[in-house]
Length: 123
Image (cartoon, rainbow, N blue to C red):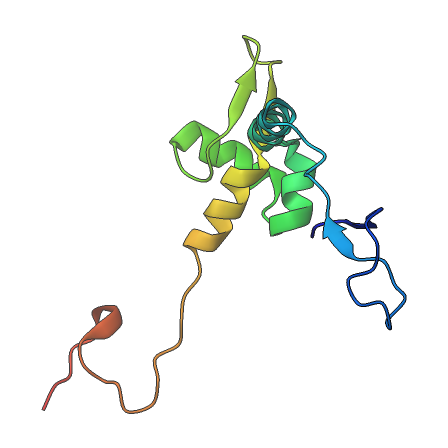
């Protein structure tokens, strides 16, 4: 939205009695705008790392199940911070959201019986 200010010019319509409103120049320079865009990009790239307990609170998947999945190569991607058995494990919030979304299923609409979801129509 542009800001407006009163100009010092005389009123264009003498009977109206108000000064003309003229648009102001944008307050930001191109350099400032580029800096703001770069800052927004950096903020978007910052990962929000979650603990097992936080993942449990979001997904209701028990922490023991998350641990088993890490050993078997199942479940959502994780980040291991450090080496050895005591290394911290974290999950990226974006990965957890994607994992939850990948499990989304839609019900079959009435009358749609053609071979979807692995079922064949037999006659």
